[in-house]
Length: 374
Image 1 (cartoon, rainbow, N blue to C red):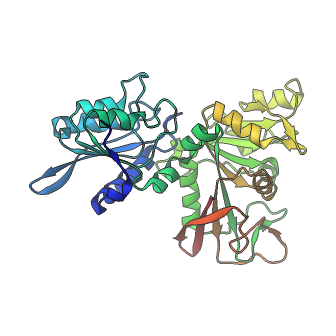
Image 2 (cartoon, rainbow, N blue to C red):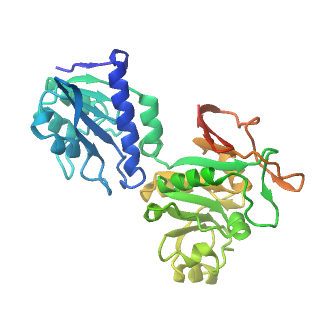
């Protein structure tokens, strides 16, 4: 008997616990392979009030799942408790039994879920197993927040491509830098730290070759303790102009670099970059460059579900024109660059059509506005 009910029945406490679970899911975001980073909290009522007796987050690499981890920690205390899960518990047999069955076997009396798994092997089936096992199911609690956290997984399952976040920093007068002088500090230290956090939770950081030539960036995560979470760096370089002396190529042996190109594999440039440790990705051509839609499909097929686009203006315009940007993170600094600056493709007063404001964050003197595609 299926006993699932809608989120309108959720209490304030349910929403508090789900918010905590979603925050916990960020712990392994970007580190769980092709599985989403899911979190589970198991809460038991006691004479002193509700107590979290088990917690779990999808393990690095994707196994074990969050529910398994939380149930293991809770033990017998899971019987009669409520489980808060950020994604519908799985219903299919893989390398481990279904998490929905495990929750029933553990005697959990109630499951509160944030969002439904779009995977055809799970969608609705996990809830059905719980309901048939006599477990009360409450769905769609803080769904929007959970969808935000696991946007890459949901995009891959729904559209079979990688999710794209366009990150851009603009000055107070709408500039992204000065031509010919390399990197220009537009935002402060706090915003730069937030950028490194974005890198830590992304599968791929993408820039165009013009940015690579102009700025010679490294694109790694350099926050203390998070250095190992540097993502794959990807350069759009249709004609293979990336120098062997660049920081990206020089660090390719320790942090992977993908060069997306339309050049043939038998070219000398292709072989030189490959010999230097870069991964060359043969791409289709479109509008004189790399075909972006096909690129995102290929990245998804390789298990890369989240792409953060960091530069430059031409690349940002290309992704926007192709309708391939899903989220915009726009940092606005407090200072002006002046008429010699390079115009940004947009600013806070001229956001591309099809986006709505989702959040506003403040980092020191900077403002970060997050927009989601409608």
